[in-house]
Structure formats: C-alpha cells, structure tokens
Image 1 (cartoon, rainbow, N blue to C red):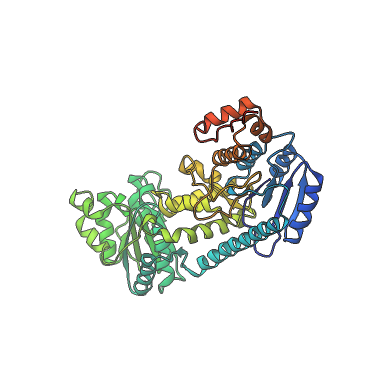
Image 2: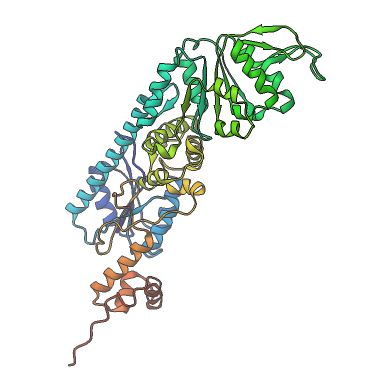
Length: 467
C-alpha cells in the first residue's frame, strides 16, 4: 500500500485521509488508527472511485493499495500525481501491516504537516513585520534601502530612483511620500512612456483653452495637481528633449507655465523620478540633457533586482499568496517544497512584478490548499527532476506532497523501477511469479524491464537443482 500526502494544512485543523483498498478489513483498521492519529478519514474500495473523490475534493493524505482489481496501484499513483500534483515518494508499508509502524508513520506525517503549516504562518507574520510603506524585504540590501528612505524623506525635494523593470520603483516613490512631511498631500503619478509626444508638455504643465486644436477648456497639469505633495515621474528617461528643458526650469525655479499662457504659476512639490535606463549612458549619447540629469540626481536610490535578494522570495511569496487567497476566497496557505525551490531558483528577469504575476496566476489555477509545480510550470517551462527519496520497502510506499525531505522526491518512474526490482528479489528473479505479484502479464513485465533498463540489473531466475 502507498501513501500520498499533498498539502500542509492550517494549524489546529484535522488533515483528511483517503484510504483506497479493496479489502474491507484493511479499510476499517486503517480508518480506526488514522482517526486516533488525528485524521478525518474517508474510504473507498477502488481506484476509479478514489480518482473521482480526489478530483471532487483533494485529500491531504492518500493511502493506496498497489494491488487492486480495477487498476494497477502504480498507475493510480500516476493519476493522483497528475491531479494532486507535488507528490513525492516517501516509503513502503508492507502487508500484513505492522500496526505500530503504521501508527508511527501517520503521526509523523501529521506532525510534519503541522510543522509546515506553522512555518507558512510564521513566514506570513514575518512578511507583515518586514513591510515598510508597502515594500517588503528582509535582505540586508533592502533593509539598507528602507533606512536610506527614512533618512532622506523628510528633507529631499528631488529624488532619482533607478532599477530594472519590476523592482518596485513606484512603491519606493510612495514610501518617500509616506515617510516624509507631505504624506497628507496629493501623490500624483505620470508614466512618461505612456504619453503621446505631442501632449507631454500639456500633461506636465497644463494648458489654457484654445492653446491647440482640441483644447476646449483649460486644464491643470500634473505639477499643479500635486501642489503641496509629491509628483512621481515614472520612466523619466522617455521624456522628449523639447520637454526636458522646461522640466529643468520647473525644478530649478518652482514655476510652471501652461501651454498657451504667458503667466507662470508657482508650484511646491517634491519630485521623485524613476528610470530603468542608465541615464549617464543616455546623456553621453545625447538623448538626455546632462543638466537635467544632474538636477534629478541630487539623491539617487538604486533598487536591487530580485536575483540579488533571493532571501526575500519566501516572504514576498507569502504576502502575495495571502493577498490573492483573500481576494479570490480560496483556502491557499503556501507552496509545496518543490514549488518553493522552483521559485528560489528562477531567473526573475521581471523581478518582483513577475513574481507577483506568477503567484496570482498560480492562485487562479489552484484547486488545493497549496501551490505546486503544476500551477507554476506554465511560467517556468518543464518540471525539474528530483532525486530518489530514501530506500524502498516491499509492497507499499508512502508518497508525500508538502512533506518532502531536503533530498527531494522520487518521480513515479523511479518508484515503479524500485518496486519491480524489489518484487524480483522477493521471488528470486522468477519473471512469471513477479508478473503475478505485480498484477501484470509477463510480456508487460519484460516491456517494463526494457523501459527501465533493468535487463542486466534485475536478479536472474534462480537455477533449479537437478533431482
């Protein structure tokens, strides 16, 4: 019989166990032992019924007989793996059961699920504690940046934020606003890369009625809208050269002039500009005014890419899952260990924004209480292989989802390979007897021996002694 453990469950709740066996006495015994070990138990007598139940409501633990009339146990494990992803080989339990060992395994899994749930809850709590003005980071580089913002925000009137796309420059701009003396005043954003070239000047400084075709009424620009507060110029490197000179004047003298007007207006704003370009290179290439760059660069804050702060990924992920689960009203509590490894090792060219989008997409797809590789693989390509977990037993194997060891979990092909070898050893290499034990034809056994390259490794049939 084999066990398959999907997701960790919330602390102080009873995990659910589905027992699949065609022997009624086995179902009764396991049900009684598991209930005492702290599980809510459901039973079924066939693989087909088990799949229907798991598709309708994934269990936290599945205990599967490897020899059933309607389906081969290993095939059932494959289907469980496909529909309740993230399962990894744990260990075999042989029949007749050692009840003390079965009880021990159930208690161990229950405790491990509780430990993992506590870790998930702790990460979520730590994420809240590590939050600074909407940003989150435990890494030294982020803590240093938070400290810098706190020190600069009360005094800086012009700030330049630089960093790759998706590193959170708008959040950093809002942090400057929130941590400074203008927090109760407007925070106004304009994305310089999204404005039509001919409208840049009007968007920044406003216009008067009749200033150009379509100007049917006067309109204030973003500088006036941010009066007394903070103006965030996102992707400032996209500004046309014709507008850069007027922006420089606004920064130097605190005055703006609406398009079509001869009267300057005084404005009092803190300007936070952001760019994913190297403005020094842009200046050297003649695409950005040097005097404007030096005026913006009074205070520069560089936002680190996610690959340089990987220790923050678990906390960012916990925060994103918490928010998505609450918004979508889904009981998602965390990630499977293999999914955690996948996130930690990803390239993250899109940085925190990409991570957030991946988590949101995975939450939309998720049916269970945790995100697995299946929900993430669309963003990261083929699933990665894992190393075998521990040594096999005889006829039954425990599979764990969310209760994997640091060594990883064996893929089902490895489970099948080890199981065939173990059966062949038990029957002294007798292929016909092995096929009978496995519940397959001798021809099917030879095909599997060939597929797993076991022809040489499998024990040969024991020679008969002459009479």
